[in-house]
Length: 177
Image (cartoon, rainbow, N blue to C red):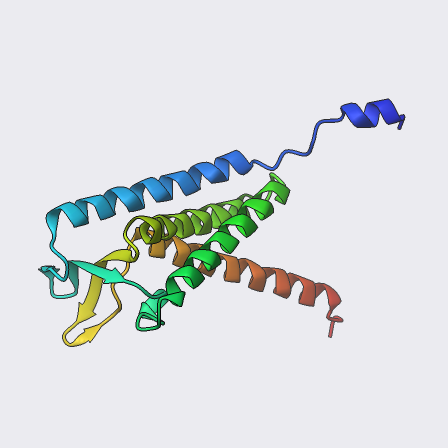
């Protein structure tokens, strides 16, 4: 191939804009739902919907499951830094992702949107607003929000894809018995 033809070749398409659109949708739905919760419920309010589900307005200053919620002021900067790191990492990965890896793009879109949704809360409110509470009798799952749901779904799909990749590589290496 001659050098001039190589320079004129278009860059490989990653489809990153499509996945950034998924992220934007997650952020918009997350922030809109939190806006409704903040405007309709006072802090610590709980509105039972049925025996297993309630709407609440709780503030989480920690991470998942309120980890480190009682830690010092450093935790705010730690969680903001961690979220910024993941946002940068996911954007970097999206730019490198081949267009045919649609499920991985969707995973990155969910994780990016969830991270940004909660990051916005930390900047605007100083904490994350949680409003979905699942429970059974006296057993309560920690309250969460749509950004948390996107993060959980994205991370779960990512682990599943890694497991699938590991199985395929193991099957290629394993001798037939």
